[in-house]
Length: 623
Image: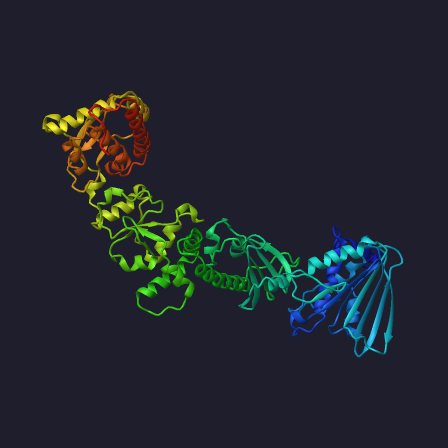
C-alpha cells in the first residue's frame, strides 16, 4: 500500500461484534458477568463477590459492588484489546474484547450505559448506536458524588427477546460460580447452592476446591478454572488426560484414583492453565495436582461407603475388589508394611487389605488379602482361579498352601486380568493363575524345576487293564455299564458327542503308573491312550473307551456294590467327573476338554431319560 497499512474501522467493528458469539449473541452478556467478578480485588472471597441483574421489556442491567474503574481502566474499556488482566492470574478475562460483544446487532442493542465509581467521583459513559453494526457514539459525564455501587452496565435493546435470552445465558454462566447473584430479585441457582442444600461436604485439597455428587448427574467431572466451566469429562478421561483411554478401571489405576459407582464431581482449580480458547487445559503439574485432589476426595468417600455397606452385599464386594485393583500398587506396599510389623495409618488401604472377599478352595470361611499374605509359605506360589472353575488342575497334586478363589466373579471386575494385577501387587510376582496355566509352558517348566510339580503329572502314562486281569465283580460291572451304553438314548448322545470315525463306545478299566493322578475316568483309544481331538482325515477307525480307573476308591466301591442300580450310578458319576478327569489326563490341551464337558452334561440327561423309559430290572432303586 502506498500509504502503509490501512484499516477500515467500520468494517472491523461490524465483524468484531457479530462474530464473537454468532451462534448465540446473548452469550455476550456472560462477558459482563466475568467483568463483574474481575471488578473485585483478588483478596475478596468468591462468596463475597455479589451482583444484581435486573430486566424489563427493553433492557437488562448488571450491578456489582467491586472497585469500580479508575481513569486508566476507563481508557482500557474503550480500547480494542485494552486490558490490564493479561498478566494477572487471578482474573478470568484476558483479551480486552469481551465488552464489545454486547453490541451484537442480533441483540438489537441501541444504547449501553456504564456508570462506575472512579477516583472518588461518579463517571457515566453512554454508547449510542446510530445504526445496527455501526460504531457507537460515545459521550461521558462526571458526577461529583460516587455511586454506592462499583459498576452498573445497562443495555437497552429494540429486540424484546434479547433481555430474556441474556438472562438465560446469565443463568448458564453463573451456574458454576459461588458468587451470590440475584436476577430480578431472586437468587441465581448454582451448583454450590445445590450442594449446600443437599448437604454435600465441600473438599479443599492441593489448592483445589470441589464436591462429590453421589447419584447426581451421571458419572463425570466438571472441571472449573476460576469457577468458569471448561468441560465435562468422565473420571477415566480426566485421569488419562484423554490419551489412551480404555474406558475401564485401567484409566483410574493410571493415577490411583478410587472407583465409586455413579458418582460425579465438580472441581475448581484457579491455577489450571487453560488454552487460549478456554475450552481445554494443559496436562502439567497443576493438572496432576488437581487429579490428586480429586483422588483424595474420592478416597474419603470410599472409606465412608465401605463403612456403610454390609460386608456380604454385592455392592461391598464390587467396591472392595475394584478399588483393590485401582489402588493395587499402594495396597501392595501397605500389606508389606503390615507383615513387617510397622504401624500403618492409611485407613482406606487397611479396609481394602482386611476385607474378606476371597475364599480358599475347599474352605467355607472368607479371607482377606492380608490373611492370605500371613498364611502363605514364602517359597511357594500363590495359586488362584479367577473363574473358580479350574481349581482341579493336575488333580491338585502339586505343592501349594491353598488355592484362592474370588467371591466376586472376574467378569464383575471392570478390567482385564484384574485378579492377576491385585495378587501380584499384594504378594509379589510368584502368583500362578490356574485358569491360564495350561497355555503357559514356561511357568509350568519353572514349577517343575522348583519341585512344586511332579513332571509325571504333566504327561501321565495310562494303560488299559485286560479283562482277564479283572475279578468277577469288576467284569460284571463292566457288563452292566456296557449294556446301559447300548441303550438307544445313551448311544445317540455318545454318537453325537464323540463324532465320526469310531466303532462305538465300550467301558473299560484303565490304570496309571503316576501315583498323583486324580482322574477317575476319561476317554481312551484302543491303545489305552487318552483320546485327543484330531482332524477327521487323521482319525483311526476304532472304539472309544469310557475308562474307569481301577484304583479309584469310588470305582472300587461300585464294583463291590450289590445295588441293582449300580451301573446307572456309576455312569452318572463318571459323566460328572469326565471333564475334570480329562484335564488331569491331558492337562495342556484345552480342545481335548471341550468334548468331554458337553458330553458329560448330555450323558447325564440321557441317563435320566433311560431310567424313565426303560428302568433296570431288580426292583426299586435304593435312595
